[in-house]
Amino acid sequence: MSVDVLLGLQWGDEGKGKVVDYLSTNYDIIARFQGGPNAGHTLVINGKKTVLHTIPSGIFNENVTNVIGNGVVIDPITLSKEIAKLKVEGLSLTNLVVSEKAHLILPTHRLLDAASEKSKGKEKIGSTLKGIGPTYMDKTGRNGFRVGDLLQEDAKDKYEKLKAKHLALLSMYPEVEFDLAQEEEKWWKSAEELKQLHITDCVYYINQEIKAGKRVLAEGAQGSMLDIDFGTYPFVTSSNTVTAGVCTGLGIAPKHIGKVIGISKAYCTRVGGGPFPSELFDEDGELLRKEGHEFGATTGRPRRCGWIDIPQLKYTIMVNGVDEIVLTKMDVLDVFEKVGIVASYEINGEATTQLPYEYKDGMPVNVKMMEGWKESVNSCRAVYELPTPAKQFVNTLQQQLGVNIKMISVGPGREEIFQA
Image (tube, rainbow, N blue to C red):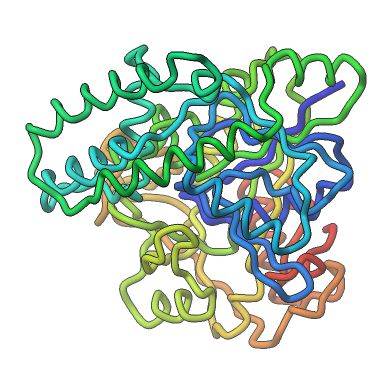
């Protein structure tokens, strides 16, 4: 009778979707608890790549119920496209449930997002321009538009009232190219499709299922370093991406939280602006990007790359209460003569493993270089099969982090992961 949690420990893009898909057979329910279509969870099944933005990553398991929780913000247009692609794959989506309390992203939310980001100039935060921030602002401002509002007789009136507020706000920003009439037409068509899904009060649903002994896995989006409270503010997302967000994003009590599984790449990446102390600007950084195919699943933007960062991971392990770690993309390091681990930061001439308030680029880092393994780990299906330097790399991470690495991913495919 517990809710396990799976979330990213870095700046997102850690491979959460693949791991959720892999673990889904152990659960009755997979539930997204925050974020929106700014997420890009990539699954590779039988050699075919699928990117999920809103739908939970257990959707390919027909025996698992997939819940879009109240903490998620939904763009009906994006969701409609996602559903259409999955139906082409032969999925019926009868195992998809949507919270009536989830907030909806309006076309004017996306327009506001684009205009606001443009107004920032060089100080822009790297928004995905999906309307996430403005939607959460309306949610906390107590005038948002929710899924349940679509089912009410005054749905269009509520929509127009919120739209009018947005249009007034837009007068403060520079103009951006955006065909509002066309986007609204698509939005209402997609909203009608959304209304045909299984919409319910997911707070009651989840709690009833927990009481009935069902196993739930809460799936996070983005990464812990993008959390609105604990991330690298203001270069963060607009929701709580950490374990605490599960309770508010699904409506469950803290006592129901069970095991917390943290996902980390064997190196580190970040998309957009914001501090990234371990970032590499040399050939190693370029090689990480090339070998890891590091381009955003949602935005297509090239990701900034660097060595794995121990102080950063220890911080997110602490905030989330992580019980075990899944290490992904080990295979990307196959080509390196030497691999790096950021062991500490230099602040005022002293080494520390604590993140300072002024967490910024250019902060000196102490990097421990280890021997690379210079051979493919793609076919490995157990720790003992890893090359000796790769085993030493994993053992060093465990010792430094104080948490066991329980699974290792050595490729993008569903089958390219094993218990450590």
